[in-house]
Image (cartoon, rainbow, N blue to C red; front, top):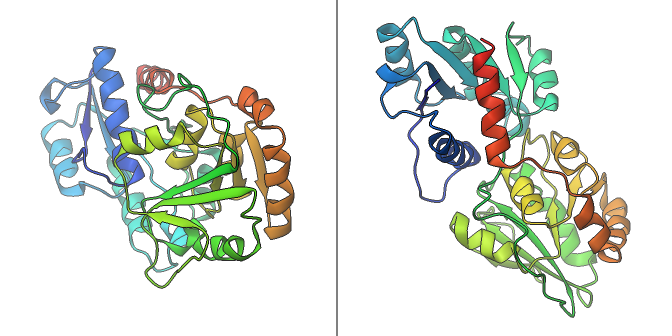
Length: 297
């Protein structure tokens, strides 16, 4: 069974959808389950609201093929209530034979908007195992190294929360680095901020990190959290969206600043324990989940 991905993939730093689908493509190639020619494909996989015109044209040309829609996040929650992309994606779903949600949380939230596709499944995202893995020895740092990454400068990525941490975190114990894009009006005194890096550069950076921090809200399946866990880095994440489904026992959750300060200390003093508790699927396993779902259609 061959899959064609109807999405303009790029190797440049980009959003989570591109990053995951690029990884998935590589694994499907390894499994001899990918084609660059839509006419040779059994399945056309498309994503969110993107590349709609090209995908609609493929549906007209190949109505006999299976069209599977990977839903993106809920922009009306994550961005603003008038964000049109969520409605566009729901309308785009009408040409699909089946739907893939990125998390159980996303499936439940889409249902609240009246979107309940008949044939669907939940498959989490994954990280590139060649880059994000545990095949390295952690340095014993004098301070505990914290990292947060974000391609999006959306405030729901937690930038206001990090502003509080910038004032309240004990920086005699911790170094905190942020990599990515942030709102221009957010300035930190103690948190070190770096411009977006390539995927391979972030993977290298994670090798020297002790704890990954995510204050993201209403994110259906954070690639950043997945990359950290795949690298053997415990995660302290906001108890929101799909975060609990990913972190499980490989870290802790928090609801407010007091929770965070208590739980960061709990992980700091038990890092090896939380590393051992990390349980995250590889892209090879996720690709197999995709293929198995396609075969059931």
